[in-house]
Length: 92
Image 1 (cartoon, rainbow, N blue to C red):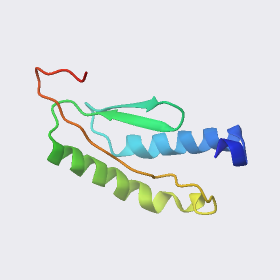
Image 2: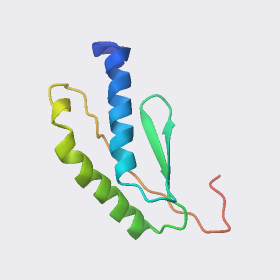
Image 3: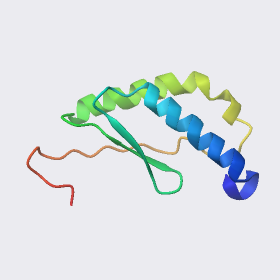
């Protein structure tokens, strides 16, 4: 997006996407920017089933609020993934 439409618009999209993501989060969840255009969501004490519910809630909240993104031929919502770890485990 930055290459084709400029950094100002790219920044606006990042801010808009982060706000949409935050709307669906729970109080204990943490959202951070991970790399240039990626976000990571940490959901403590959450199994895969509960994480799926949170991600579906975010998708449902975001879908009707993103029609202004349709003119851009770049995908805004490319993919989501989840990973779990044992309470005593490490992410390494």
